[in-house]
Image (cartoon, rainbow, N blue to C red):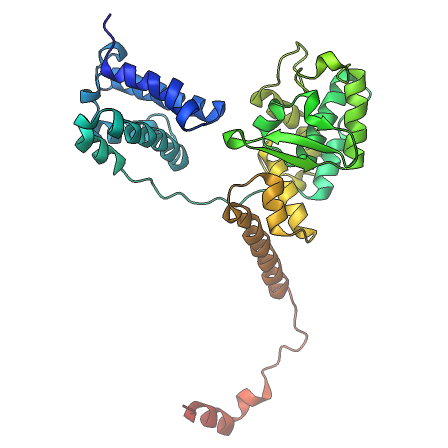
Length: 340
């Protein structure tokens, strides 16, 4: 089977350009790869062009637009997901401008496809009381309970993304005072985050029990699935869902309909902000590339405070419901109306 120009360029794009020249993380490259798996599926099912026959000449602006409509209508993808798929395609065709300039006009037509506007959903977060109640549902006297408490409490205390938690190793923890943890986030960017003494005590207990303090265990997963393998994103979500369900029975109004691992990150950011921590420090703590991303929390906090004040204002019951005397003074009213 003779390889096509599309297969050659896509292979170089995913295996050489993205990790080498762009330095993108493994997770980002996997997301780009998933976009092209979907695109190949679309071209096969809807355009009747098999992957081994697909060439760059087959790919046009109209077909890319049809692909984006297909993932939204038939796969029920949101505007956010549609925009993420388009971003991956844009990156590929921007790459092709320099590798295959013979198709430059069509590549630029594809690059001109705009992103769709998305409605920004308010960021949900848990109160301190809700976080504490959730942790109280974990039994620290069992093997899994000890792991789950160390996992969830660390995820909250460090404000880590779920992928950052998955990739943690025992060597990521620095027990020397001041105690810290090294997290590797988007774009393989590392950051050092301080840890509370209470959190260090939980980790110390968990790691000693699981023999993770020895020199030969430094590169083991800090949190495994019981088979010495890293926990998956779905695995962490299931752990959180288990204890959230128990806490909801006690205080259902404290928790939103869906509680995801990322809500711990939002919660930590809001709690730091409400405690008066400078937003620049919160940006560095969370590993945001731009402070504008962190300012979302400040705007959300201000909005919630305003709504609470408005509600309190509406709930005020005035004792004197009589009409003010000045409204009965016809002469005064006429004088007020005459003012320019």
